[in-house]
Length: 446
Image (cartoon, rainbow, N blue to C red; front, side):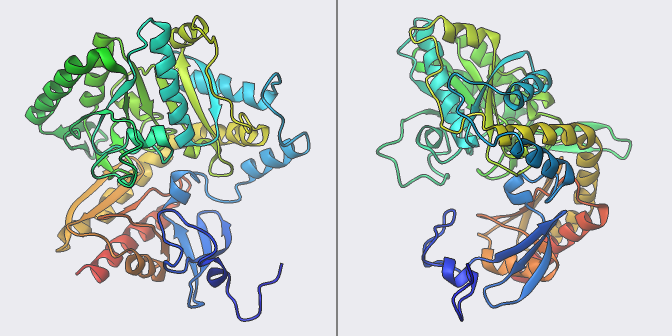
């Protein structure tokens, strides 16, 4: 449909379409005209056109960039067969093939896969599963979850309840969210990589020990009402891009075992290589009971997530009153999404071990000058994640435009200007991204 005379796409959008956490009368968005490789072609509300490296990988999912031939071919091939069938009473090869591959590469002996529509929905499913598990174990009073401050697990209701209740994004719903048990935010840590390639974690060990005692005390106080522990391993994402020591995850595994709780690990943002391990849980050599994955699962082509569980959990659900996990989305195991996800896994497995450390080294070097800017309080890198943290909220429109003028698309939030680029981003483009972040922060927040 042609645009009305005198109207831009952005002006037609404004007031008609809601965007994430933005008012209807907020700033006009940038209009995407094309995307290929790691670059977006966007037009600003004032008509200026930019070719920009996508430093966000479309909120961390487009790890292979755009219009990747292998993913395009997988989608076309499945379209020639069928794009969707219901999963009730039916099955299909893309779903079974993908489930076999996911259980094979997951951290620990995962045996079962439940497909969900999105990352947030996968967390909902995991929480429901934990309640059913405890009921099957004759502990129906266990209806709450232990988690940590600073976490983010999605925007649906149960997922919101395990997000940070104070600094999170869901303060508008205090009366309807379930009240969970929150431990303090894990102490910050930093992964130090020597020129030789040796890695070690730098943290305040005393602070970690004190934190561990607080977690143990909370678990003891609430043991009869807790069903599971829910956590993002090693890296908290939208809650603030904070890194914590793998020992914190090990401690949560110990507490879960001591009190008969499931350990639910949210790897929606951290899975498939992003932190420098295929799954962030592997930094701690921890095997979760329940694993949530999404985002990069399909390389950003289609919305798909999965909940993986151990055979122990699956057996408990099968012995329960209802015998089934009580969830069933219309688009569960969408064949098109599963087929593309299979192709995406092949690409991840072939490249992440080289690409993620490469990107991390370049980000460490080229983001370092930001530490000398007056409003910057921290610069941190973990895997293919680079973060510049300010001492004040980011002027998002100004930093976005300043970065675009330097050839890079970023989407800051709170006090953070960060990047999680596609794994296929070249060395030159990673340097461009880092230089643009440093330059934009220095220009807008002098």
